[in-house]
Amino acid sequence: MRLDRKILELYPDFSRSRIEGLVKAGLVTVNGSVAEKAGQKVAADAAIVVTIPPPVPAEPEAEAIPLDVVFEDDDLIVVNKPPGMVVHPAPGHFTGTLVNALLGHCPTLSGIGGVARPGIVHRLDQDTSGLIVVAKSQAAMDALAKAFASHRNIEKTYLAIVHGQPCLAAGRIENLIGRHPVDRKRMAIVERNGKLAVTNWRKFVEFDEVDCVGRANHPVSWMECRIETGRTHQIRVHMASIGCPVIGDRTYGKSTLDRRLDPVPVRQMLHAWRLRLHHPTRGQEMTFVAPIPEDMKAYLPLTR
Image 1 (tube, rainbow, N blue to C red):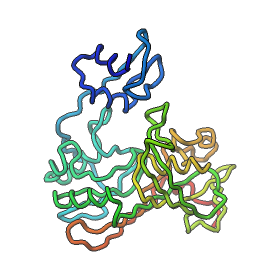
Image 2 (cartoon, rainbow, N blue to C red):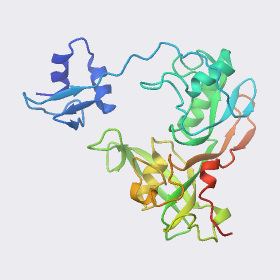
Image 3 (cartoon, helix red, strand yellow):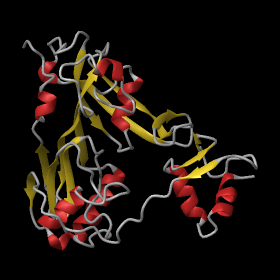
């Protein structure tokens, strides 16, 4: 029997699209293992567990949360997001998100691009710090959404601190990224059923000539990653693929190496550092830079 049909027997009020969404979110297990796809075959006596997330409020509430505003006008706002902040409400994070803070800062944002994620045109992982641009008008929302979807006139550059030192000074990674075939909560480089992902990396020029050993008994490197696409976990997956996982990455990293660092990282050392775009209504090119966070500065080279 197909898994989705089995779930439908257990939850007859569920639609097939909701069942597929639960499976893709990694919320369904079969005999203790995360289900791979809704249409997979399961035995009649298989132990199926479905974790149903709590309902998301129809509209996020405004909250008085301080924001580090880098730029703001009538059409857009650019924010330096701190690590640990979720971008928009989701199961387990209904309050304290960037959207809650934005609504408190700009009440007119409500409803732009949808009530659940007002103004949001791109996202950062919870533990990734740095620049994120938000639309404040519907015209800006439409223009920015089109720009981010096509990757035209958008340049996003991240700083990552990674374990190890690549053999080359720079490189380009181009492949397909999709859901991990076994662990649906992870992403992976795949041969099919993925989306094109392109990352241009190089050793961060400021430290190019420095042995970035830092406070560890093994090498670490500062990397500058300019992405041409915006796939989920793209930089984290790509850095791990070349043997240089991001420090503090609990999903794709090396916890044994993390524990040898001083201080031991409490989050992934990834920062959305520089953002270049064209203003959505006026058209001029704009570039923004977010300072290196203090927790990343702890891994600056000890000798310069």
